[in-house]
Each structure stands twice: as C-alpha cells, then as structure tokens.
Image (cartoon, rainbow, N blue to C red; front, top):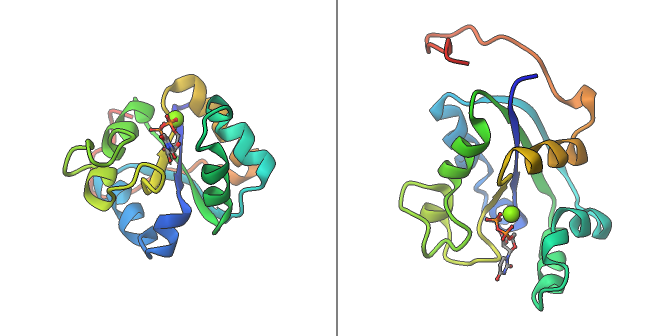
Length: 151
Ligand code: UDP
Ligand code: MG
C-alpha cells in the first residue's frame, strides 16, 4: 500500500474561504488527492484526534473550535508524503512557521492554524482510518504531463 497522509482544513480556514487556496497548494505541487470530504467533527472525534492534548488547559476551547464549523478532510498519497505534507504545512505556531508554508502564509493564531497534517507514519495510518472508510479512498492513475515515476 502506498504511503498516505491526512490533512484537515480547520473551521477557521473554512470560514475564511481558504478551502480552494489550500487545496491548490497540494494540487500545484503535484500531490495526488485520493480522498476528499466535508464533515462535522463530533466531541468524540475531537477527543480521539487530539487525545494527546486532552489534559491541556486549552482543550475545551480547541474542542469547541473544531466543532464550530465543518472541516474538510483530505487524503493525500505518494512516496514520503507524510513528511512532505508536514513540511508544506509548517510548524504548529504560525508565527514561527516559515513563509511559503500554509501556516506561515495564512495564519498568526496557534489554535486557528489553518490545517492539521499527520505528524508521522503511525499517526497518518490511524488518522486515515478514523476519518475515511475504505470505499472513500480511491485508487487511480494520473495521466498528465508531470512525471510521477518516482512514486
Ligand atoms: N493548539 C492550541 N493551543 C496550543 C497548542 C496547540 O490550540 O497551545 C492546537 C493547534 O490547533 C494545534 C493542535 O492543537 O494544531 C494540535 O497540536 P499539536 O501539538 O498536535 O500540533 P500540530 O500537530 O497540529 O502541529
Ligand atoms: Mg499533531
């Protein structure tokens, strides 16, 4: 199975009408989209997704934020995709994220840092299963001018 990762376009970015801009970052780079949907996060889903933060003082605010507006879940596929997407996303604090990254270009707020991206291979596997059923992930060949032979 080819390496895949999960991106979530967070509520703040949906409100700011950045869905297209963010999708374009991945498409323009030549990254293959293999799953895509808008969905509402439940309290349960937020608790699973951010289990490592459940004891943080900001967890309740984070949970309300993630449930405030639907999110867009994107599954991306390719060689080394987990790290490549994390690099395109930038570090957690957008004030420190490098210009050219999604967080670096579109945000100054830690909570509202535009996107989630799986941090490592193990997290990506778990998160993809959490957000997508098998029949929502697609297998197809791309037939355009870019050379994808390294995938
Ligand atoms: N977060 C927050 N306040 C903080 C730290 C994190 O609201 O002080 C939120 C922020 O939206 C971040 C998410 O919690 O993206 C998950 O944190 P994590 O450390 O996993 O960072 P990420 O993997 O998203 O870079
Ligand atoms: Mg994380």
